[in-house]
Length: 95
Image (cartoon, rainbow, N blue to C red; front, top):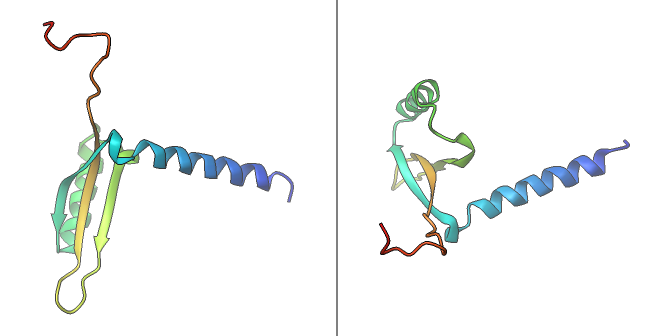
C-alpha cells in the first residue's frame, strides 16, 4: 500500500524521540504508587486520571513485576522527573 513506509518511519522517529527524552542523564523515575493488589492498582490509576490533571501521562511508566512462587506480582506507577539544569549565564551566588 502506498504511504505505509512514510507512516512507519514517522512512528519510529516518534518512538526514538520519546526514548531520548527519558535518558538517565535527563532525570530520574520516581515511584508514585506501588501495590501487590491488582484491583487497588486499577482503582488508584482511575482516580489519578480523573482528578490529577498535573500528571503528564506521556512521562508516566506503569510496570508489572511478575512474581513467581517466591514473590507476589507487584504493580508500580512511576513518573519521570527531569533534573533541574542550572542556567550557565546565571551565577548561583546571585540572588
